[in-house]
Length: 404
Ligand code: PLP
Image (cartoon, rainbow, N blue to C red; front, side):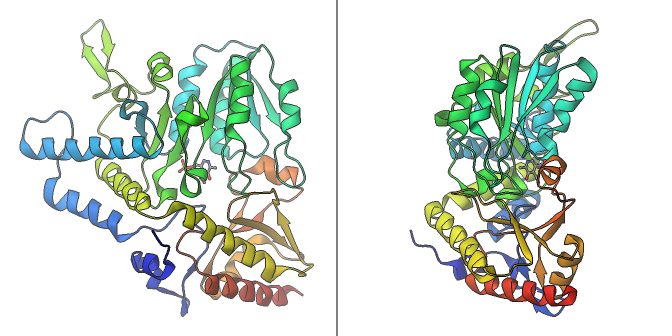
């Protein structure tokens, strides 16, 4: 399989549009990735040709849609080396983490500990804060080193006999740092703690095998994986899902209901109350199928080459501070510009057609750790080109001239 970025770009209709009279240079893939035609067409086709509600029906359309929906679950399970019964559809990574925190939380006691890291997205902090506020659970955080790596040496002392859950990101959405999931998981398991990994960023860039990683839970959203919004996944080991309390109640998740008793459906349906995001699930499956058809190792090399090219292009610009320099990091460039607010930088770049994100990136503790209130972030996806990186570098240098 060869990697041809021009051919890939041709599959993304939006990439041919202009922004402010300039060709769009989309460097915001870490926030949400653009969609290939395969995804758009799968969703349109499902609505035009087979649409119905799933599971409950006896008619042809209901059966066809249910087959597409469950086929998407199987595709996603295969993609991460799991079983379909271990893949719960959620609204996204955020809901998946809330589901686990709320399900496990009911059994936690005051003084029980949850170990997070200093580089988490709010999605992997706030649901655990609920347990701190409501139940007296203690939150601890693995520190982040100056280069953006986790302080792995600090972990053994942070895991105690009270640690119930260790929850951390596979790849930081700000720093690009890729954390050693298996190593941390082994440390957590040795102490009897469960492991939840936030795979939101990693799953788009790395080949993830949840079985080899041995994690208990792994979450991600479709929209960062070239799929639609409104859908994501909670992977849970079969025995973990079987032991987890249901999250929301309603149709689909029950075995039976009477006036004085209920029984639950088996996982994954136990955690999918109500009509699911049917069209989105089908689009999610199409995105994963599309990605599996690409040379993922070549994509990873391509993305890294874009990141390195940006770094080289910006070398020597002493007004630039890069946040996150961990070895082996993903293609995410977070930075501040001396004398300029990140929001202004992003707005000026937009005039050149360059889309970057600016703000806290939903990671306020990490911003505080690095002594900034916000940063700008250029994140590279498989459809970006070397020419786009050069145009970004050029635009950023011109942007700096506004403030110099
Ligand atoms: N975790 C990480 C590392 C993320 O980058 C994001 C999204 O920015 C999330 C969690 C939350 O994802 P979502 O908003 O799709 O639930």
